[in-house]
Image (cartoon, rainbow, N blue to C red; front, side, top):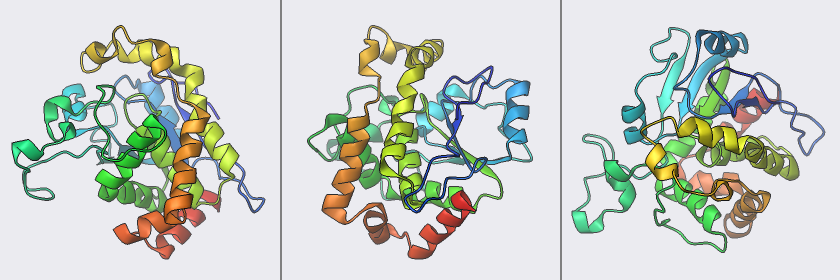
Length: 266
């Protein structure tokens, strides 16, 4: 369900998506959007009115630093969780800093941006799905934390990245799948961002953080296609036994799945 906002162009509530057992995802539990840099006071009121309590920000640390705070930063009613899906190194966090010759591009802050033709860490038969699976392989810590935030938030969780289509689309698809959502409906939700792609690109072009990487790229290079998410989810089924089975070796549990289902369905 699309939600109108002054400072967002890809905001929607995934409530209403059907599940395989005849239920539906509850409204006001999981929202998704493009980045929050242009939120107005009216937008903040709209989000709070929909029960917003938590924000999952999937942008890289570099993106967040370059873009600066949003109207929700420091808000007493909202917790913000910065969970990059890129393999970045921060002093005091995670494994030891890799040697330069071992660095992937994502480990360098100046490159920690989407749309810069970074090489995925895994390769599938679909190039974009390769990047999506790389998110899961490179940052299972962020993936699992994001899903647990959705499950445990006292109110609604808003998941966003820059455009709200790739990183956001991946995490939302995982959450919906774990909750038992119908596969075709999950894929349709992912693909819906293409309906707003021109507006998304136009908005990001006003940001110095993204403009150089977007300039002169055709709109078609930013569109999301149903077959991409179909490929990713089918690969997780075929190679790992499904989303939950993929996540369990990384610390996810059956109880996590149960809590997520209760949150999104009850």
